[in-house]
Every structure is written in structure tokens, then in C-alpha cells.
Length: 272
Image 1 (tube, rainbow, N blue to C red):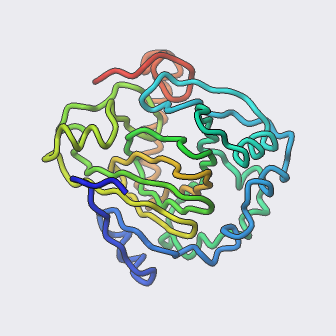
Image 2: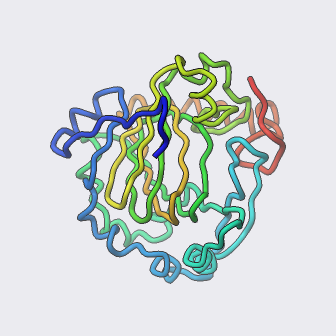
């Protein structure tokens, strides 16, 4: 695990989940989802067998900091790629994949009701990728519960004001997130007083609470499957949704993030 300014985030027992989700600090819940059927069943061969010919769009490299690139494959072929990951190969990443929409029967393998506060609006997608696949430093507009289903992942985290305080906010457009023009380690090295910095490695069944606006960068230590559950009270989620729709309208008309976004192939990022 990375040393230096980064330190482990606090850990909590699962019985403190509801209380923790009312707080404002990242928290690790070790093994909270270890008994979920998905942790045992969702192997890469199993996922690939669900619909081998299903077309999927894969992200090439780190789209948050590099030019956005995509490639196409099928779910079956991609699952085979993950099982035979080769050193030196540029990672391709199945990001924000709505696995539960494609295969509703998989909901029976989860215990989401044990996690999210009662009355929350939730949105769960999966992130499936090989070792070294990376999501650049960014912050989400909603609270997130990240559940590792398979493999191992490393999260670097920085406080809500860290990127703006360092003047490293990126102009690259993303609908539900804000991006940084530098990585977490570079940010911490150049601006050690910018805020709190954490790093944590997660194993299958571990759950990480990432509050809204906390910056985080994620790398796969091995091929992995992550269930990302964004949530919040109805009024907060609907308010954010309306704001996002307004920005999306500008983006679709080319008035915001044209050629510089995470959703279309384009150029490199720029500082705001």
C-alpha cells in the first residue's frame, strides 16, 4: 500500500452502517458483503456465459485524464480476456455497465437492502476490468457505496476541497462527476496541505463508503468486479438530476465539453 501522506481511512463495524452514512468521511466496512451469493458466483466465466454475444463498449486506458477512447467487444470475449490478462497490454475497462438491467435475475445474488438507507433513491452499476485498469481522480455528485464482488482494488481518496485548493480542476466534462487534471499521488506530493488523503486496498466482500464530493482514484490490483451503488434522499437526488439534465442539454448541443468529455472520443483534458 502507498506510504507517505496517504493513511488508511477509518473502519467501522457493519452495525454502524446507518450511522456512518449520515457522516461525511470515507469509511471501510471489511467483509460486510462477504456472505452475498454474488461474491461466490460472479466469476468471469459465469458473467461471460450469461450472454456471450452481447455487444459491450469498453473504455481504453484512463478516460478521466487521457483522451477518451472506446473499443467494442462482446461480453463473452471480454470475460475470456480478463481470465487471460497479459502483462503490458493496455487495459480495456467495462465501466458503468448496467449488469442488473441486462440480467435482472442477478439481483437475487445481492443484499442491497442491507446497505442503503430506507427511502433512498439508488442506482447500481458494475465496473468490470483487468489488473491495472484505472479510473482517474474524480468526485461524484452523490454518495456511493462501493462493493468489491471479485478481485482486489485500490482506492486513493482526497478531501472535497483538495483539488480546487490546488487549482487542479479539469475542464473535461462528465455528467455525474467532476474531474481532476492530476492523479491522487501527484496531488498529494505537490500539495500535501490541500486536505485529507487516504488509501485503502479492498478485497472481495469489502464495502467502502465514499461521500459525495470526495475525490477518489481507483486502480485494479487484479481483474475485478465492483458494484457501485449511488444513493441519496429523494429530494437531493432529484435536485442533482435536474442540474445534470441542464448540463447534459448544453453538452448535447455542443455548448459544454465539446470534444472534451468522458462520453465521446476526443482530446486530452485541460485545466479549468
